[in-house]
Length: 281
Image (cartoon, rainbow, N blue to C red; front, top):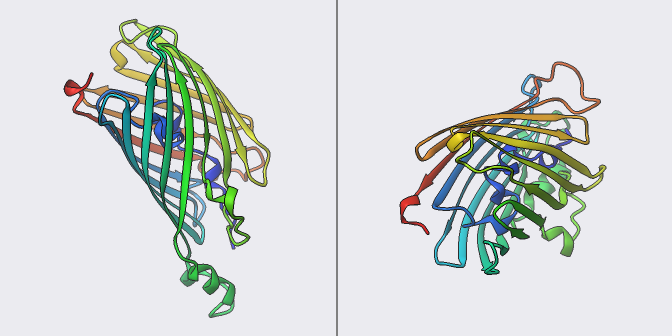
C-alpha cells in the first residue's frame, strides 16, 4: 500500500487568496461572495501520484455573521478521501482602527476509501474490505483570527475528530494545528504592496513544518507574485492575474528534501470568482 502525505502539503492558495480553506474564521471576512476552485497534481511523473480538487465558497450574510462551504477530494495511490464541510463564522468588531476578532467552526462529513481494484495482492484482501466497510464520519475544524488593516494573527485546529477518537486504520498523516502571522506593507493603490508571512503547521507522525515568505501585488492587485520557503526544504512559487471579478493563480512547489529526482514537482491552479461585491459594505 502506498503512503499518502498529500494532506501535509497544503494548497498554495490557502496562504493568501483563500485562507478560509485552512481556517474557518475567514468565512465571510472579505468583501463579496468568494468562490474558489482549485486543482493540484503532485509528483505527476509517478503513477498514482496525489491529485487534489477543492471547491469552496464564503459570504458574510449579515453584519457579523459569515457562512461558507468546502468540498475537498484527494486521491493518493490507493487511498481516496472526500470531505464536505459547512462553516459558521462570527466577526466581532473592536471599534478601534478596524480591528476585529473572528471565530469560525466547520462541521461536515469525511469519507475515506481504498481502491480495491488497483491492489496488487491476494484477491479479496480482508484488510482492504474492512477499510472500505467503514462508514462516513463527522469531522470538523475550529479557527480564530485577529485582524487590523495590516496585521493578521490566526490559529486553527483542523480534523477535530482525532481529538475525540483515535483511528488506527487511518493511513493518511494529518495536520494537528496551524498558527500564522502576516503584516501588510502598502495598499492596493500603491505601485507595489507586500505581505510577509510566517506560519507553523503541526503534523502527525512527522516533524512540524514552518513556512516563511511573502505575497507581492502590483497596483490595484492586477498581478501578484508569491514565494514561500518551507522547513522541509521545499519552496512554493505562484503568480496571479486579476481581471474584474476573476482572479486566476498558478503555483509550482519544488520537491521535498529526500524525494527521488524527476518526480515532476507539484502544479496547482486556482480560480477565484468574486460576486455581489457592489452590494457589500
